[in-house]
Image 1 (cartoon, rainbow, N blue to C red):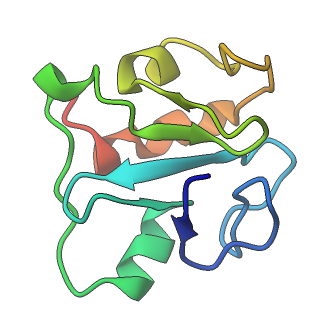
Image 2: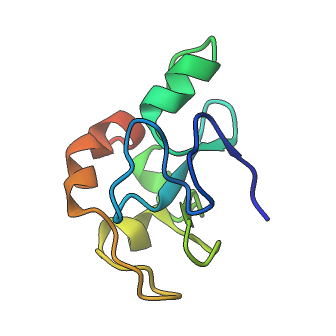
Length: 104
């Protein structure tokens, strides 16, 4: 099982910052190789700047579905609004934060 760092509030990776029923992913941060529920959790727990994933690294399995605990590539995550393993729906509004995590 993947360890999710930060201020998680349940076992599906929701955190104190983002905790709707659709907020079920955690992201592995390139800068520290740790999964966090969101950038706010990362910034509250780390003493370094976020390093974003480069476009040629989008095959990296850096997304964790909090429902089935399976990882998926950044590409797969960005091209879908559901987990390819369990069909759980992701929060479609997360795309507004992609620029924080990924160089698009």
